[in-house]
Length: 232
Image (cartoon, rainbow, N blue to C red; front, side, top):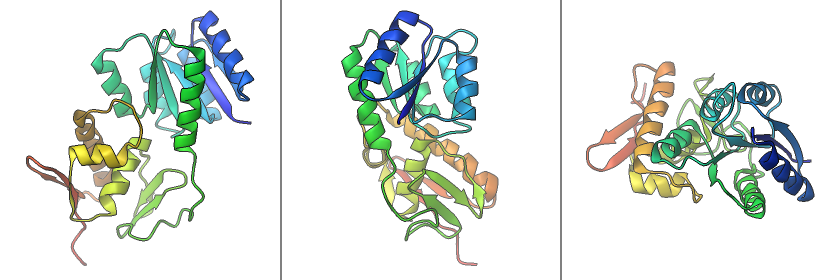
């Protein structure tokens, strides 16, 4: 059964969400503080997490940041704080969607179904990588994992999506708008500024493995392109 972790300190809200999700056929666990939730998520990643931002002991954004160091499972943020900074920060750290309070429990269940459907691994070739992967780069499209020269890159799902698009079209210049369209096939409010942040993170992670080569080339005023290394 699909397991969903609910991280919400308002017990009335958590109880209603649990009732609706269980009625929809999901198994649920509830945590009222961020630290306890993080320990459980890291020890046994669920199929999806509903994560409030305002939490005791450890804030939701920090739970998200630390969880993304260990797991790429989908996370939906629950928040009454709709400021753009929170939205952007959450997306940069790998949130898959937002639901703003107050919300309809039925709408929340629908969003959960949509995110699970969107992020479900498709039956595909396994982790040897797909045709077209750059030399030394292996992309596991089933589990959203990537490695370079045998070293895991530990990417967020959004970083993986960008890497997938760029690396499989070496030399092709993509505008930020086109990368948004190709790498983020959902309705989350992602800005072009977030693309710059994700590219920066990708460069850092790729560069940690191959410091002598810059894999992603910036094209001033246009966008980004994947730069394959010269033949040995």
